Image 1: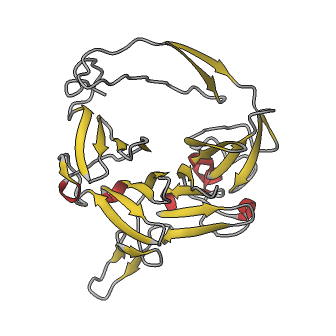
Image 2: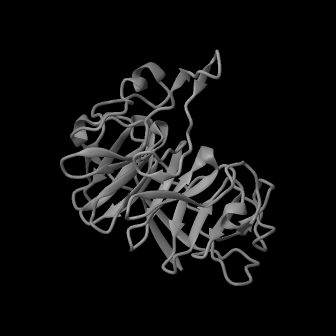
Length: 288
């Protein structure tokens, strides 16, 4: 089998695995990688894609270290600013320069502010949602506006009546969108019914936002760890990417393993274990 991948100005490492009901050997693929010649309008010399989502009119790309969302026209390969600051925000390591580009602001798309945006996903109506990790929030982008769906912005430290020290405000709350809280959401995915699923990384939970605007946990105890089982009894650590298959199963990428959450909420490990490394073989023996 031959696969072809296009490179977006920076190296994308592509790892392809084939799982069968009894996976025991890796399957070789012929992979062809090429580089797209991208064109941009004053977007700066650094291009550091973090995540991407294919839309009806192009490829939408989050640039976490430049705090913005870009759109790639797949006809002429023109990069356009979709939301967030324009111009050169630095390499992602030039903190003083890069800090000027981060922010938390609901406004028109190109006047809005983001803080390490990562996961991006479209809802059935074509609205783009962003896991704005540094702002601990879920943002929504329409043609004319960026708004906050849930979350409260960057973590704040305040003096609480019970403590003489600065304390961080709570970062986890279930309930309606107006009060729900997240802590560094990394990725999100939408199902056909309009439910949104989110890897809430520092809360060690998989969260769900219903079409009626209610936020709940579907898996995870809130404590870092590793345990399979019924959703709210399972444990996660180092939550990262999230995808959904046509049957409604969620697949969660952790540092050393891949977990599966069935529609009825059971969490299992489909590949990898607690040991890091590189090893092909049976799914539970494989290492990542």
